[in-house]
Image (cartoon, rainbow, N blue to C red; front, side, top):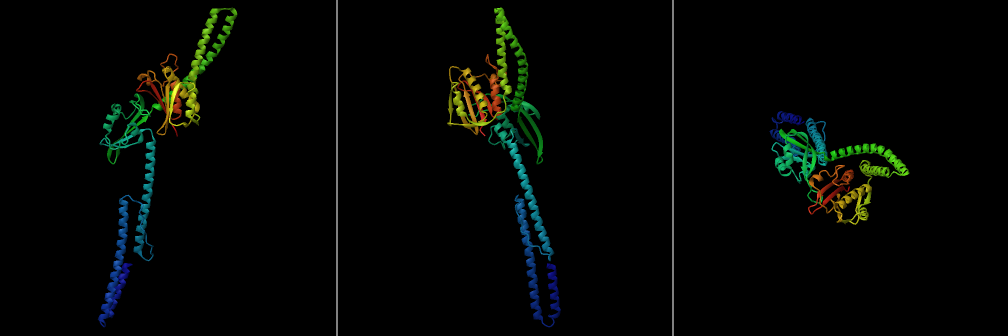
Length: 438
């Protein structure tokens, strides 16, 4: 359009030159000045429009360079008679389309990163990413809790292991293995706990990011899963033994009863003593089977809201213990019968550990968890016994069945909680049960 306008001005100038210059030079001079002025004004207008569009594009590109994809350029109305305007319109419209696409892709990437961040931080797998300088550049919340650090970014991986977890250093050459670590977890109330063996699956992956070597270390806890699998195995064994022994005990008991009646009729004191002894041992065996059947019959908790303080006060009528609590009532959502069974087992153990002195029970809310602590004032428990205390059939008591603490841990796990044993610094054994309130 600008070229056509300039051609027309040139034609007018030539015509005025031919027609006006010979006869009227002044009129030709005036017309020449007007034509030159019009041409100059038109060229400046065209130049100004181009500069404005270039400035708009420059501003938009600078926003893109800064990572701001929300920019949108104003597109002038499309003029069908102007080819230059069509090109300018297409350029600005294409720029807006590109920014819209980049904005959508950035938003999609942000949503994926947000989802990935939530998944990684919600996982209980300890995740640590280390660069080629042995510096930690990423760690999830499980790793920060595991290494007891508020933030691990920028720390040296080797120094962190030396200070907090030297037990992991001998496994530096393993890329995929199940390892045992002796870890010392502090209890919820801050008291130190004895070191316990924990099973972990260690995996390392070598990868490249931005052209440099990185190492991804993953530690997956296996102890709880192994406990669950072990407990299920014990339950199956108990069911089989229970079935077989009951099938044998029933006819033996019946025969002993009949033999005892016959011995009384024949007045044979020796036979009466024999059958009485056999019947006594059969009754003891039946009680033994019945105690172990409790673990196999333990079902999933049927959760309902109940007042835990009220339940503990009712148990004070059966067991001697002091009770300390913060609230007059504490409503908890769980299986009341199972929680009561857990408390009875712990109180019985505490009473047997120290019959001469009342045990102590405290209840509190800590960090969104319900914490129940049962402490006796006995001799405590050796470290080697602490590691085996939750095993079925394991007991240090002469008449113990070794099933009470196993049932307690099963009830705690069923409520997504945790139970720990610690020797109190001032003497006695302390059992801490931590259950989520929500």
